[in-house]
Amino acid sequence: MSRPAFELADIFRQHGPRYRATRRLPRQQLRVMRAIELCRTSALGGHTEKCTRCDYARNSYNSCRNRHCPKCQGADRIQWLESRQAELLPVEYFHVVFTLPEPVARIAFYNQQTIYGILFRAAGETLLTIARDSKHLGADIGFFGILHTWGQNLLHHPHVHFVVPGGGIAPDGQWVSCRPGFFLPVRVLSRLFRRLFLVALQKAFKNKQLRFFGDLTALRASAAFDAWLDPLRDSEWVVFAKKPFGGPQTAIQYLARYTHRVALSNDRITGISDSGVTFRWKDYRAHDRHKTRSMTIDADEFIRRFLIHTLPPGFQRIRYFGLLANRHRMQNLDRCRRLLTSAAAELLPSIAQCQTARCDLSVREPDRCPQCRLGILVRVALAATPAPDTS
Image (cartoon, rainbow, N blue to C red; front, side, top):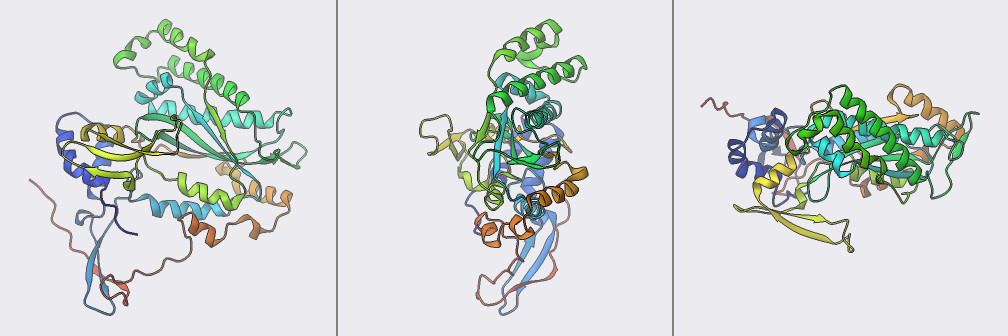
């Protein structure tokens, strides 16, 4: 795969020093910037590769392996998808998105660890509770969620994508399937999600787990915070159930697009200059929502927007619930397969489908020599690493 013409690392190297010099940044953001700047450079070490047929040689440098780096997510995604293949079931899969209202997102900006955790728990409990209700599915379900904190324009937009198999295990131990093309009513999901989230948010406030800054400082007072909550109790919260994307073979293609994604991939960057950064985006609120647009913003503003999506250290952005919870996942999957009476081969997407999803799980082909096109590049030595700069 050819290298993109512009990369996030190029922006950080060109504009990062000035950006860091003009403001105080959290340590985690500084680490992210430094990791991306050094990714696949001699500073991280590497090895020398030589062609088996001609005199061509090159240095191949190590990756930073930071989860916010757009160059380092491909390998991690393939490994994760390979593990997920064995967990797919021969049923229709659904995609449900829970989004925080803008006022709550503003508080989440300064309280990421607390608010993102509440978002996961409230949304997960909502799906489990409504699915167990006999008026709806009447069964225990299993699913996983992926946290995204960005919109296409890189602004703060926290939401969780859930991938849910279309069915579950009823109290009598039998498998219950959803109606074709329909999972659970989004209005019912929205109302319960709103209630559970606000209860947890109020508890976090009473336990002094929330911080308020800037124009939100007044919310430190209990009366002001309660008054701020009132409109949220009556507003409509967005829960969106997308059109089901079919069975397990289609699910793997969806997963390849959403897992291990960062706020902006390198292939969306179309220009870097002294005055700003240009990148492609889609305005999903517009009438022609699928049309790709171009946006140019100041380099400092671009860096600021990217860095606000730096997750707290150790925060798990992919989480599992219900039948797929880590503790009993394999036992529950075996039970589901027995109830569905499907052969194991039917549960897995083919290699061709994985290739379509750009996540070929077969053995990687050796690198061909770009000079003679006949030989294979093999590792012959460790690449020399420059001495650290002590100035």
